[in-house]
Every structure is written in structure tokens, then in C-alpha cells.
Image (cartoon, rainbow over all chains, first blue to last red):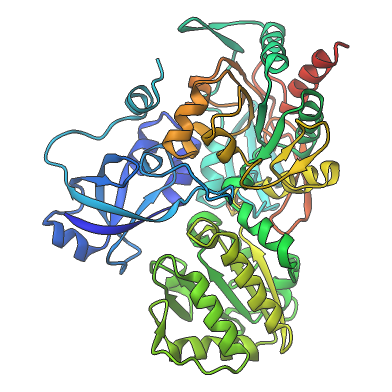
Length: 130
Length: 429
Ligand code: SF4
């Protein structure tokens, strides 16, 4: 397990796959990921492409760990904005109107079991859509 | 095949107006000049479309006529005590004008996606004002370009080539004549093309901005480092800022979404204000959705406030933190929602998305999204800037006219027309 600061943000892939469709395979592939620094991958003992579980005080999710192309950023995990990242965020704004989308403490560990939810499963399981 | 020139790309706040589109049998077959984000939008906008209005009856969606969908929408809105009307950054100013009238009529809250992107920027600007300019000024004159907490190569890919570092301005013509600085927590793609990259510790922008102000005003920082940045580097950046002829600080959600929020923006604006004692300096937010700037402007002309406007008292009332949708939803106060051109179920923290999904939602959108999936009523609309016209504001506040370049699918009308139908039904016309 490693401790990181989670930053959610825009990525080029998020932008292009969003236009293909929110329920497309591309959107899930580009969003249900977490970019990690090569050293953090090493500390976890995993390779790029393996699944990890990310946990914050608000929730947890399994996503694919990817070696970051925008490294070095040891201790920072990056996830593209979207339904997967939002499972890890709190809704309070401290009277600012803006929830905290960046700079959240998180724990990451190897996901030995469990799989990455697709958007339909996520909506069903986490939001309760029928 | 027909070629249409000077098409405006309705994806990001750059609103590039030099796109060339080839059309064959009402289909976009080729696109020139757009970046990969714009290209993907022009070539895929017709996928995952909703083609029929629908209403959720018990657990199933049933396709209905437009009139039936409008009637159901009117029923939901008029029965609500505290409805929210939200979205707007991906549609035209003309549509929003009608939306504001609806909000006023039903005593609801009208908010746009600003509240979860650059809301803190607006609060910061309202607190201490700003020195700003158009992107044209930056292109023509800026010899120092700073991107802070913003990665335009991913979020606004043509920003550098059209307006800043890589653009050919009237007075500053080449990349060599400009210095580019990137401040970010990661070594982003944009950082890789910068002359100076400053890697800052997460959640410490306020500290670095304050230290820079101190250095700009000739203070001596009695620390080895601030926010993970060695003091020599802070002094070097302060010197670059003071000695440039025209500096531009462009900042992104790195400042607005991390702890500090509007205080970070105030610190950034204060730095730029200080710099104007020594040279010319401007500050500009990197606005994301193509018309989020328009959403602020239109809401401002009509109500006096740029977002989060509450009409429940019978007059416009604005208090971010109270009348912003993230807060209203988190407090569980709204009892109906009209969502236009937005997908809050995908973009709000999970607990808020869950709460929102439990109230009756009417969504007007061209596409299938998680929000349409949880809506009570869904009304499909045409795509602004491709299938219908409209006006949008570029991120620096310059209004541009978006064109209609192909016909929408049969029976699909614009957001503006749908909203006008809702408004006239609500008025009982
Ligand atoms: S930079 Fe923005 S507006 Fe310009 S082509 Fe790319 S997505 Fe469209």
C-alpha cells in the first residue's frame, strides 16, 4: 500500500473519448485509470496495466494503473475527471460552491480480486439506476 | 462535396474559428485545422444520439411525442418547491436567455457549470478585480507566458499555437521572443515545451503565490524553499516577471479545485496587480467548455450575477456556497431539476450524484449520458455549432457566431426552441 495525493483533471484522452460517447468502450478505457509515477509503481510492485484499488475517506474504486507520461510526480496519483474518479470525492464545498476535486489523500494497493466496473455497472451499483 | 470555411469549433473555450469542414450528403466527411479534441467531436457528434423524447413510466422509458414530453416537464417544474436549472456551458447564449426566464418564472435556482470549474475564479475577481485582456493582445504583445495549474496541451490544445507561445503576433512573432513558464504539480506535456518548469507541492499554490508577491516587491524570503520550490527559483521567476514587457498569467483548475479555492485566485490576482507597478501584466482563466464564459456573461446581464442565481425569493439572490448547485444538492434541498446540455451525474462527487438521481430530472441533451439515464423526462436537442446556430463567448469574453453546417436528425430541434416551448406552456400561453 502507498499513500498518495489524488489529483483529478482533464486529459486529452478523456476529451476525445467523451465525444465518441459516454457509454463507449473508449470512454471507459480512458477514464477508469490512474496515472502513477514509475517509482510509485515500483513501490507497489506492479507494472503499468495492472489493476489497483484506490481508497479515500469517501469511497473506493478499482482502476487500471498506468505509468504516467507526465512524470516525475512521485506521491501523486492522477485520474481523469468522470464517474470513476468521482467515487473518490466528497461533496462538501466548505461554503465555496466548489467540491475539492484535487489534492485529496488516498491509499493505493494492488487489486488482487475484483474487476473494473463499466459505466452501466457503476450507475447500477453506486447510484442505484435501474 | 461542399466545403465550409471559418467554422467555429464548439468544444473548448478557445472557440477556434478557422475550422474547415467538408460535407457530403449532410455528413461531415473531413475536418481541417481542428485539434484532436475538436476533430473527435466533429466526426463523432452523431454517435450515441437520442432521437426520440422519452418519459420514464414506472421503471421503463417510453418514447413520447415532443408535446407530451414538454407537458410532463412543465408538470414537474410547476409542482416543485425549489427546482434547480443547471448546465448551459455547452449551449448557446440564446438558449440560456430563455432558461433564465424559466428560472425566474418558477422561482428556481439557475446555475451553470462554472460553479464546479471556475466558480472560485469569479468569486476571486469579484473580491479584488482583475487586469485582463483579450487573447489577441497576448498573441500580439506578450513576451512572458505563464501557465499555472493548467495543461493546455491536453485541455485546450490550440491555445498555444493560436494565442500564446507558438503564435505569430503583430509585434512578437516567434517562439524565441517569448519566455514560457509552467507551474504545476506534474511535469505535464505543456511543461515539456516550457523554458522554465516549476514543480510545486500539491495544495500549496497560495504559499507560492504569496512568496512570489513578496519577492516581486523586493522582500527577502527567509526560507530555503516555499511550496517545495527553492527560493532561488522563486526569485528567478519574480525577476522574469518584473523585467518582461507584457506578461500573461493563465491559470486553470489547478488553482480553483484545490484547497484554498477562491483564496488561491485572489493571491494570483494580487500578484498580477503588484506586477502592474513595474510592467504590464494580465491574468486570464483557462475556461473549459466552449460557452461557459457566455453562460456567465448572459446570466450577469440579465440577473446581475454570473452563476448560482436563486429566484426563490422573487428576486435574484446570489451567494456561492449556498446557492451553488453542489451545495443545494448536498443539502438535499432541491426537489426537481432541469438540466440543459450537461451531465452532472458524471461530474459531481458520488454522494451528490446519488442524491440528484433521486429527484425528478428533465434533461435536454443531444446525447445519451449517465444523466439522461436517471432522468424522468429526456428531450433530445440539436448540436449547437453543427446542427443549429447560436452565439458563444470565447474564454476571453469575445462573442462568436456558431454556424449550422448540417441538418439535425428528423424532428430534432434546438435547446432554444425546446426551452421556448417549455416557457410558453409554463406561462399558460
Ligand atoms: S483548441 Fe478547442 S476550440 Fe480549438 S479546435 Fe481544439 S477543441 Fe476546438
